[in-house]
Length: 162
Image (tube, rainbow, N blue to C red; front, side, top):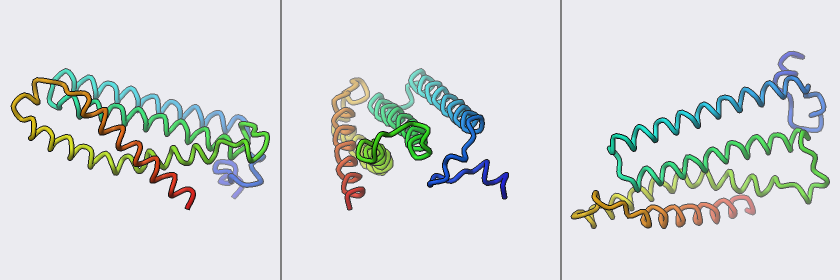
């Protein structure tokens, strides 16, 4: 029981039991895995761009969304650091935990809304069928992402506030 308790410490009042070496190893292992995921994402994006198998609007939408998801993973580490008191918070009123929670839920709801954005983008591709593949039309993907993130922010804010 003591070994499991030292490997998986609780995030409650007894968070002082977390050893510095264990927390450093956990954070470094997580950072390395996230860095490898980011590098793999960049290589996959370069492969898709070199073959031109997917239209520019779709790849730009997915790359921006992937970047936002990487930022959300970093926010998760920051939230864990605040909950374990590894980062000092002067008072509960000054804590950025609600904002971090809203941004994380925004990322999760934007994943669901991104599917609708892809459907809208593909329907616009059938509308501009004559020259859609020749032009990039980046305003379509930018406006769709703006609508998706605005809707997901308001949805997540409503979820957090109840």
